[in-house]
Length: 145
Length: 91
Image (cartoon, rainbow over all chains, first blue to last red; front, side, top):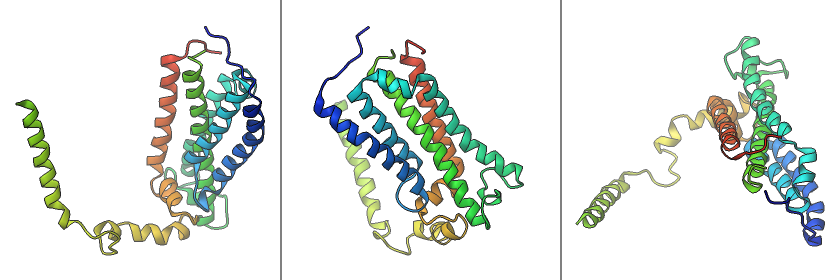
């Protein structure tokens, strides 16, 4: 069991404290704008995970685990998948077929409901991808400790 | 001997593939079969039916929603597998 890698690199710490909020904000932008421009759940999840990985590299695993504990990571991953499948099942409940976003009562027209359905699905994908990336990083970089 | 046989079979396969190349449609040809089948429907429908301006997102989440649900499940399963294989402390 190795001790937790702590770094006192002031350049890395200063850079990370500037970059991490911007990376996370950009990840959220990519997540929300997946329907309007380039982007989507998979890309946004990876960007968000990259923000947390940079934070871990600069401030150590202990600091990141205060925000994203192992339990919360697993919970986020399952929640993302649940959101995706849940939107599909909701469409069945409102009288459509599985994943038929048009029947959801979210907008004025089927196209508008479909847009919000797609956004919800993208959020689900983003959560799952981010949580799984962070989890794999925890496991591989810190040898499962 | 086996090495020459491997090289020969590679060369033969390459020759077969090259023989088929002239029959491929031109790059960006609007009459190519791949542009005739479902693509016009996607281009017209992604805003009218799916309500999003990004055609890639419309195909990913709407027209091929099952596929993407499966992809997300694959990523989830991969993460769980990594956890089960190399995690030592569950805390």
